[in-house]
Length: 217
Image (cartoon, rainbow, N blue to C red):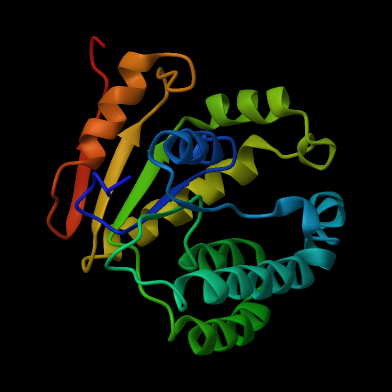
């Protein structure tokens, strides 16, 4: 299928439980695009991190960074980004955002140096989509999907994650960012909601922040 979007590399981001992977999977099913999904279950430190974050923050973030780098290097650097549609449920800068949230000052300084070296070779997405969901809504989705190691995630942690994302969004001026409010949206089962998102992805946006809400939809 020809790429129906004015973008070749779309990254869909959001808090834990926002619905990133669900939306990416639906887009893959409809448009037969290249799909990059983050593999959380492969991180051997993740369950330990949620139990003892101060002890395991650095190894959990280092593992995520190396795995994301490996996946993106294998897929982005060997593909023609001008021909093939690629949709990912994360972008590499996420690595630094979570590290900033989870590491102490000295650990973050070291981590940032490593990140900058690895990040230099990757293109930014042509469009960054951020799915906004309230902390309460994200917690509800996390409970529903039932990953055992996620069940102790607190509202305070999710709030910090939300804040670090928006801090980045406020400072990123080189790419278009589309914030979609999905708090009262069911794009998994509602064709109307899903089609509205697809229509929004077909629009051409200038660098900067843009919004899509579902008022009275």
